[in-house]
Amino acid sequence: MAVLCGLSLSAIACDAAFPGASDVDPVDEPIRDDNGSPPMGGSGEPDDSSGGPGGSPSVEEPKGGSGGSASGGDGGGASGGTAGVGGVAIPSAGFPALPTDPCGYGASRTVEAKDTQGLKDALATSTPGTRISLAPGTYSASFVIARSGRPGNPIVVCGPRTAILQSGSSDDGIHIKADHIVLSGFQVRGGLRGVLTDGSEGVLISALEVHSIGQEAIHLRAHSRNNMIRNCRIHNTGVSKAQFGEGIYVGSAVTSWAKHGGGANQPDRSDNNFIINNNLGPDVRAEHIDVKEGTTGGTIQGNVFDGRGMSGEGYADSWIDVKGSQWLIANNEGKSSLKDGFQVHVVADGWGNGNTFRGNAFDLAGSGYGVWIEKAAQNNKVTCDNRIIGNAKGIANIACQ
Image (tube, rainbow, N blue to C red; front, side, top):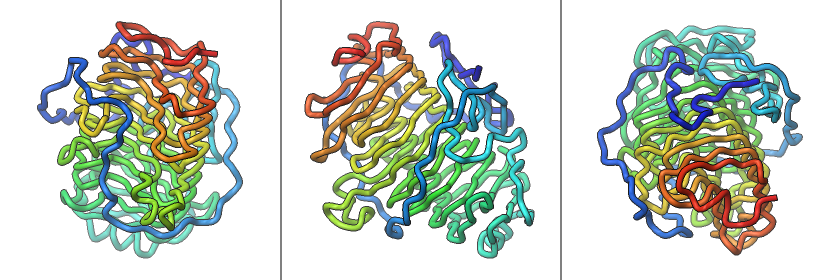
């Protein structure tokens, strides 16, 4: 059975599960420990700054894997292949299992990058099957990946935690505008956003450490579908704008559909994405995971949330905020939320419906619910195997099933 850090909920201390991770102190900032968070229901967020390509053709919907034994890897935690958590299968979504070596992915060609220009040159000339191996050191620039791999033959960028991609405060660390890319093992720090995808499919973001980011750490946007974020460590986000400091952000707000969806009434269909076995917090200042209206059919499973340092700005008072539909949120755990563990909001007609919350564990600092669902949301399901401790109001504000 896979082992999650802090499963007892007595503490969340996962550094040991991330071998090679740097010891980066969180920004020294007061922690909200009262119940004075803003009212639920709103969603303040930026108008995304850079445009992206239109949607790419859909592919066969990923299917979950079968249960199995877990294996450690380059980021710690359970395997992103077919390992089970509490008897529930972790989906593989067609991606390779987590290797013990961050560069342990197959390749037909290997390029070693030792400095910033070397990495830029390698990205500019990469072809399907290229593995770009990063040497330890700091790569100071904003990097764009615009060349695609192929299914089963991705372009891999990999390296140890001592390989650090660092960008300026107004730039994105890595901007992916391509398909079938693997990022594995290294650090991303600084920058406006850590990793951003636009119109991408088949991207695997695996065992990265993303921290000290101006706004959100990882953003899947502009019809980015069938991607996976697994076994990453995310902390210290929203350094420049706390209310925009999400850990993982999927899709675009309705106010940005014209830019990233293709039209004012055309959603950003960043569908069927998998967020698996990540460790988020402390000092993730907005929601740890924000699922926007217009997205459908994703999975959030096996993640661990540490809400210390949440700001409460922009209505950020829960670990997960779901505004999309038909998402599965299963076997996650967390401590120290400002209000609720997870929330469902309806900010666009027809969205916020049909989500399932199963087997999660909540240790709330406030007096909220494990799962709070807006009355206008329809057909959401909270199963009775969710667990809650502390002074919370209950598992959910609707009856469990």
